[in-house]
Image (cartoon, rainbow, N blue to C red; front, side, top):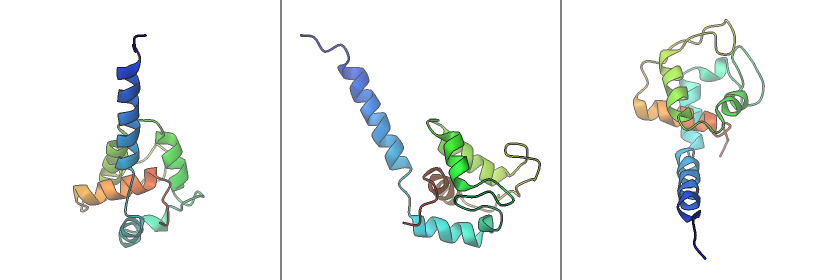
Amino acid sequence: MKMHFTLPLITAGLLAMTSTAALAVDAAAAKALASKSACLACHAVDKKLVGPSYKDVAAKHKGQADALEKVAARIKSGGAGVYGPVPMPAQAQLKDDELKLLAGWILAGAPDQ
């Protein structure tokens, strides 16, 4: 019996593991950075404040291969119109690793641990 589906299954498994690993974050460090950067003044984990909840952001980007980069870029540049008319201020002062930490944490549903 030939295994025609072996390579696609292996590839899918590796992608799934990579996606999960990419979202593995230091929740304490991410939450501290979100607090320090005033993100928590407008965003909450599971309810809309001024901006969308982190769970809504995670749901919107679920399954997107480039979600981490998209969310990190949005944090850096700020903007309006994606979730409503209220603009989100740019966080251009954050370093790339900090942007990715925040984005990964948000995409993971902003866990406490």
